[in-house]
Length: 320
Image 1 (cartoon, rainbow, N blue to C red):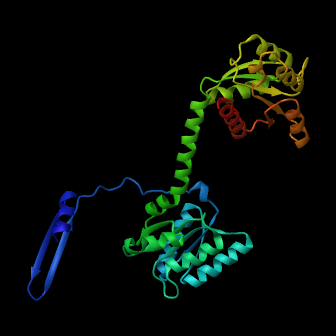
Image 2: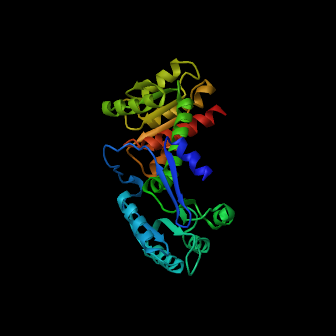
């Protein structure tokens, strides 16, 4: 009662106790609560939309409730009251190529407890798919065993939509955080680096310049291989950090320009990284580019992640 009173006091409410000997006690808790202007509406989780989920709980009402929430999230849920059946359904889904992407499993089931159910499911599906243990009890005593069996997270009963959404979104949030951190690191690496873009198509020039400048690069554009070669000759070694070289250009094509750069008297300039950018994306085209002295080969239309990965790799190698 002391703990309850402290909580009620902290929430700005009051608690009243009425007791009569031989009849019992009545506890009345009065808390001030604001009335919501409108009901909370939950949107679907894009990353999970249309994917299958399996709920295993010996309480049918719990299964129906959780499945209803999963449908609202956008998933396709199934349910069972038995751990052994959950394992059988897992194997069947795996063999049919329509796997469950989320598992929510009760800790206490009559035929097979939650941890053993998880252990058997992991043998079928591997380690990547999230498995959530649903329990009405504290899990601290068996947390280590559960994690070793392959449990991803724990949720208390009754399960509410806010908690379910939170636990299902965690893997995507971690992924987004990692991607943001990588993007920030790349921006630091690219900031101020000077790229010579040899490209004769005006639209391709505009697209490439926008992509590269957004990443932090300083971009110089030329419309043929001869001018690109002249610019490398004219400027001191180290002025350009990398060259993006279109292959089919007037006056001098990309292959010849790369060969001429590799033959320059200043040895420091001959090691300038050069990347072929071409609509010719076959393996034989890549081999021709490498034979011409190029360090990489990118296909058109521009694949932004691939461009950034290639530039990052070459700039990192050149800095070592």
